[in-house]
Image (cartoon, rainbow, N blue to C red; front, side, top):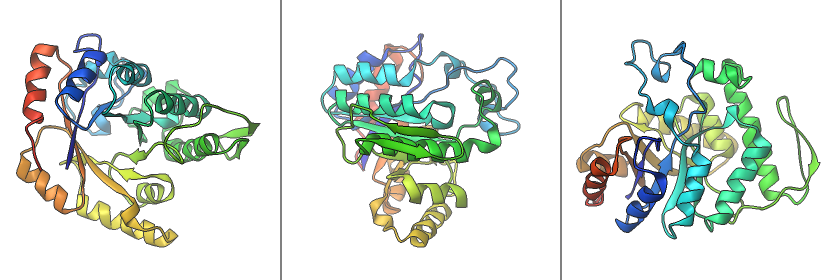
Length: 282
């Protein structure tokens, strides 16, 4: 199983460039950054949309822009995969996002992975002009429109939310036909249908979801459209570090990647944790 790490890179934590160098030096597979554009102070939506959740950590509103940070990481590394975990696709302009993804994949020589999700913070979405109940449909159209921009010399798209007249857009991604698109979150029927339609991977949060039922939903969605489920990569995002025997259980289900969390702290805290993570063998 490939082992990578994720962190909220903030103005108070170890900085992305140093972290990327240290991750690559230890032979780890990948480095992933999440995103939130901002967090309204009303805190209308509880953390993760879960009633009774604890207070939201400040790393959620202090994090660097993930694409700027990952571009800096690409410039100082040559091997590790670089991913977004996750990009809030429905909150972003899809034409600009397609450009950012393609540029980062080109600059990194094909090492980028686009982790995507629907999001949970109602007021954050509202500030972006996005209705919470429409976020899934908006994400779908944004991804489909971006695929056109990545793969066509003259791209166009017409949907309910995205209207793109015939256009040129370069650079194109290095990875063909485009960088991997990895869905986060639980796989109910609608998410499973989206995974089957336009994703190359599924990477749920470890310990938070029923993985076996999620896989059943995904396999059913794949069968419905005639897609081979073996074409889907399976990874795991972890809310906390887990022992190697738990990773082995996930490997038995077909998961081939585990992304372990690092705290948004300084190098004195983070680097010893990297040393321990680098010892994991599954």
